Image (cartoon, rainbow, N blue to C red; front, side, top):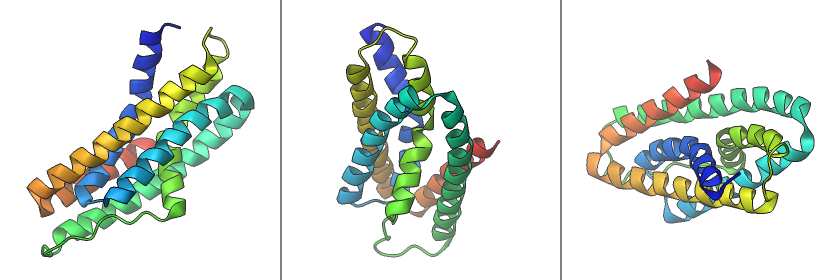
Length: 179
């Protein structure tokens, strides 16, 4: 597999994280949260293809189904919470999104499930596994960071409407995972 193909695949794998984090960023996130979420997604995009490489298709199909449902539930919950916040009268200083440890791990797992399935197929390709998964992780981490920062910037510009938009994005992503 060529370097260009690995980079294109990495961008495709990071696209879910970018769009999801754009929605989260619209609701408002603290700088520390941006770094923590980005690092967690980066690590999951390294770990999940390795897990897929070693675990085999059976385990992946079991994890994929349940992780998708759990991830969808988290997205739906966050989306409804953001929409409710967007419908309330605006506060002077909106509270940033709060992701506890379990929510952060579920978020990272939900956006990296496709990396798990890609890990199954890496074994059939001639790739440097370590370089490939590091590329996946770095690109996904950067795309996550950009989504959060861009969403935060747009959230400041659009105010309360941004929270509604972010909530709708998260609801749409959650419904997409279920359907």
